[in-house]
Length: 125
Image (cartoon, rainbow, N blue to C red; front, side, top):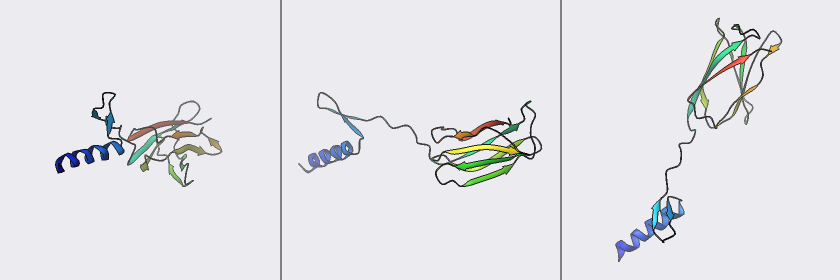
C-alpha cells in the first residue's frame, strides 16, 4: 500500500512539474525534454569594413545591453577585427561601430541566437 502511494505521489508530482503527459487512454508518458536554453557566455567577434569593403583599423565598436543600457567598447585592430568575451547569452545587445564621424548600421545580437561564437561584419555607410 505504501509503495502504491509513493508511485502515485511521484506521478502526480511529475505531472504538476510538466514532466508527464496524460494520454487519452489514461496512461502516463514522460514528456520530451525541452531544448537547451541560452544559458552562459558567448564571444562576439567580427570585422569592421568601409563602404568599399576595406578593413577599418582604429574604429570603435560598441556593444550595448538592451536591458541594462550598459555599453562596452573595443577599438579594432590593424586588420579591422574586434572581440568581446563573456557576453551573456540570455540578454539582447545592440552592436555598431564608429570612426571619424562615420557609423555602421546598428545590428542585434539576440538571446534567441544559440551560437556560442557570434561573428558579424559591420559595414561603414
